[in-house]
Length: 333
Image (cartoon, rainbow, N blue to C red; front, side, top):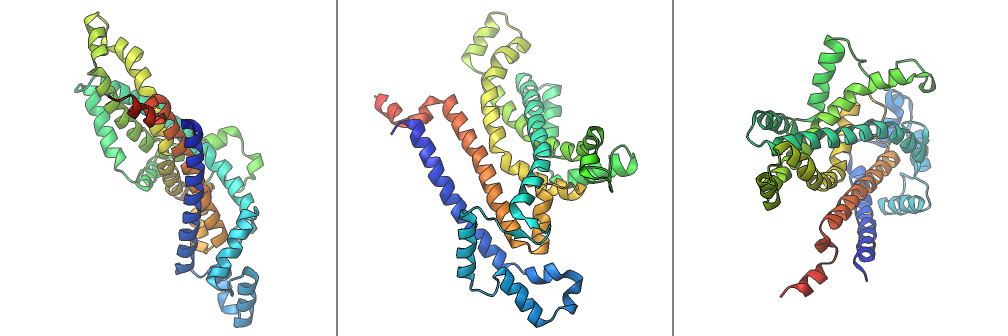
């Protein structure tokens, strides 16, 4: 089999195995959770519901059956395209995920783009002028923020710009009490600024550190020394040689960071009450909404695995030896 078809087939098989393993682990953890789905569903009315009514609810949800039967039934419905019903939002799980992911996609997509652009630019500047004042400032920024929790950055931004200065809204994706279809573009942007800043600030730090390391390696290469001997300026070398050679590795790291981006969005959306998929994950966990929680877990696994696959494919394009290691071994003396 040729390298690329073999790579794609291997990735598909591995993704299927990963999804099966995640489904097993997620279902087992949901069953071991101390949160009782029926109690969470009833909420304050739990004292008004008798044992007979609880038994009817358990039978309706299939909770009165053995765990193995529950898992088999859930897996069969999943393969048939039925993700179940969300008791938290009183809607089909597929509809909830679709609506919430579209909201999160704007936030995560813009944060992903800004992280790549600004992180790459800062990494190029720091690596090209290693040891200079710009490099020192960028390193301090990157090292401090790369180890800072997302929720702390989000709370700090909320306290400064929303509470103290009053420049931005406190929460949500639009004004409270206004229907989503009536929210204007300007209002959406105002509510998006702080969650976007919280996610982008951390993403920029990671991309900048990786790009800086790659840029330092490039600036020490022989062809850069030759360009310097020809009279090329450091800025010209950084733009003509460094940026081009460091771009694709930075892009691969950017795709591989999708998992961290989603994890950060869960915390940022919770702090800003942003109605995305991350906040739906928290709500599903608190309310014991097992169908929604399991579906989000599998969807996230698929989302992150796709990003990692794209990153690996880009690495193979950068270094053809990764695409066909047998050919490299055959060519070796």
